[in-house]
Length: 327
Image 1 (cartoon, rainbow, N blue to C red):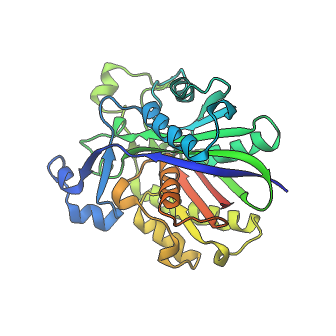
Image 2 (cartoon, rainbow, N blue to C red):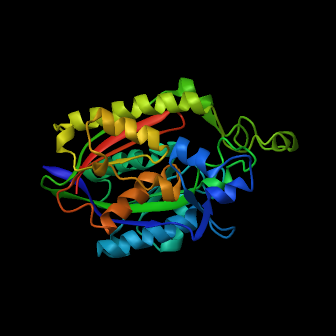
């Protein structure tokens, strides 16, 4: 049967490394506290001259190079981001299109926070199988440092910057996207939010003074929802693929918290070695997390031909998603 298949990946991490020891000098925290509660040791921080689009361009360029196809063949670009170059328009995808010279492609952004990459892959699958595109470039890119309050010790330790990308095409066979499961619950939207900067609460002197243009999170409540919904998304996507947890070669979860990842692996009865973790080196890069991890796992040879991968995520909105792919 026809399936949408990932034929290449690419990723980019900024050069600057911000360690837990660096954060000890900025806020009242400690390396031990951060490691124990999150599993994060360091994260990458984009430079002042870097943006969501510039990081996405590098990741996209690498995915194109690894695919062996010509730029002219790409006819759609989907960019998953919650930290776009511009608050309203133009889309970051259009900036990336321009910089990569993808003249034959249409381009648009999606916003599903940390679930954005899986949402984007699902949209790309739909475009391919309905013949609206032949080759799709999916990019997930985030400059989370731009919306992080570096005075808030509860959130500034969590996030990092980076981008991941992949190219999908359509082909017959048993390789490709086997299933996807998407969910959301807007009743919990205010638990993880940037309160100011949109049309409801435009930026002004008062809300800047109150630091409302930065990310705010009610951590304990988000944690509980994340564990529940990510386990649900993982189980549902595996069932929809007609598989069992023992058929999964590699679990690539959203890299938010090591305790969440451990809870999912335990529920699926997966050995720790069957879960990919780069959280200790990258922190939470929102939509880019799974895209970067996927690119790393391919580059390291952990993912091989016919490897069965379960992607699972949870993010602001709330949104959650699971996907099973045969590479």
